[in-house]
Image 1 (tube, rainbow, N blue to C red):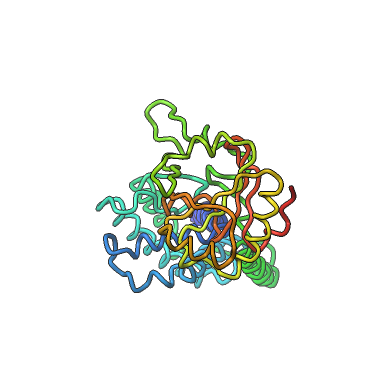
Image 2: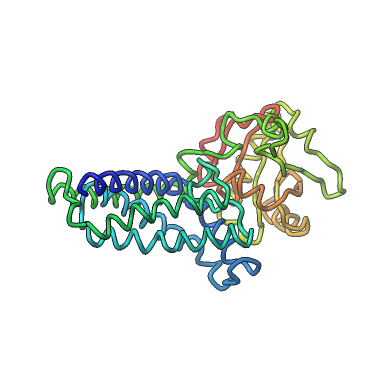
Length: 320
């Protein structure tokens, strides 16, 4: 039985640490996913949508910390029962998503590993079996070295994870698993391989006159894109920095465009207020949230290849 407990311990701990880490480096991605879950057509809990980000951070921190605590053997009874509680939440959400076909990608492993809705549900079924073993025989879970080291490892891990969360929210994810990562080619990501949907299948740029400018933008040698998926929610403190960096980009021969899902009239107001020297192209909001986790954010392209990505707060670091 001790061997079964140890096997269960390491499988569950490593799974929770990996799952928590890939979401920890991109908490906004999880927040967007919870916004889907809270939506009218899923759980109909729209009053929770404004709290999606703190809720996602809380859940991510709980997930990765429980994994660490189980691994080092800190507070085994509390940890095993907490794991059971959190896996029951995951089990319900994944069953609901799969059965009603509501959220086809639950985001359980962030953007790092994609599983089908049913695949994710069955993964959680397997995990709950291991966790039940841990709850039943948590007395066999001992600290790897000592109780004191287990305690301090857990505490220092918690502080480290808090700092990572703060850093990626202020700047950008430290690891980018999305098809718009630096070095990735957007045109290549749009190509079909067999019958599978390509990783980039909704990148479409339209001018205010209704002209499709996608190919033109992706063919240019020097392009700067200012992503503001929803102008009414954009950080207005960022537009002074956007003004400075876009003026420099234009002087250095870049074609600059704003990308937004907002109405052009909203952009015109911002353009006049901050004296911006570029126009807006319409793009799907979900696509823009996937491209960059900032509002506003800055992206540079060279013939469709992503050369750089910055949150507005880091705009002054951009070199031409």
